[in-house]
Image (cartoon, rainbow, N blue to C red; front, side, top):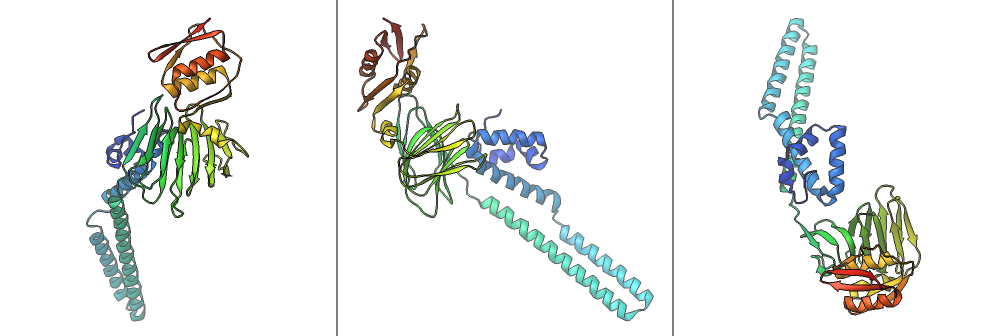
Amino acid sequence: MHNYNNYSSKDFIQDEQFKRWVLNPTPQLDAKWAAIIEKYPYQLETINIAKKTILSLNFQKVKAPSNVKERIWEEIMASQHKTSIIANKRKENKKTKKSNLLSWGVAASFLLLVTFWFAHFSKISTETANQKEVYWITKRTLDGEKLSLKLKDGTLVKLNSGSSLRFPQEFADTREVYLEGEAFFDVKRDTSTPFIIHTGEVDTKVLGTSFNVDFDPKESNVNVSVLEGKVSVSKKENELSVILTPNQMAVSDSSNTLRKISYVDINEIIAWKNGTLLFSEASFSEVIVSLEKWYGVKFINEKKLTSSARFTGKFENNESLEIVLKGLEVNYPKFGFKINGKNVLLTKK
């Protein structure tokens, strides 16, 4: 599939496949472009602008030739002349006057309709041409990295490791962003313009509050947890929705369900943003995945070692990987961990 990640409305307009879909849609083309929009949801507004522009230009090019009003007027006059001849032959003065009046009335109405037709589509074309281009910015973090952002509206965002956030350079009539991974939002309050975070099939909508969003695009899992204020979480496909208040969570997965958890420890969930690595009854595989993401390392487990033991631990102030591994050796006494650059070798003692 073609890469439409950085396409502008101009690029879409010049794309032959896109024009073919807009001007001559088929079920196959509809399915193809639905898949493209699903892959690049942040391009939906740009695609709509390009679509409107193509339809407007095509209308003017095919259905609105420059001499159309003159041709219509000539046809009206010819029709009027023919009516007058027939009326004179019949020598019915009253009926002739009535026929003339009717014909001129039809002609005037037809011309008025044509004039409105041109004015209306000229307005659409002008509005489309004058519509402001939206410039999108994408910020990404690698494993082992975190990033703090301040958006144009004053909203503060803390982006966790291995995540990305796509947002417009300037917010206009809406405040909408697209997230993959995990981020904590402290949204600037604006009662007239809700703030919306798109995460796959789930939308999180707020006016002004602080909350955490964790989205795994591979598994289609979304968790939304609230620290302050009120948050609306909705599922696009089946229109399910829940309202969250502090210390509540919404959970969505690939089964198209959306459920509400009445109480969670929000301070544990957002501990990551303050440099605290927290484990609570985590499985061995969950521990390994978390450490790889947190420190940007790769665990080498050639002997496929594993353990059924659960791990609970708290490491504050961005503790070093070496200290964390020593803590793991206490919980998993049969395992050894050896750091070699960006790799961690897992061995059996």
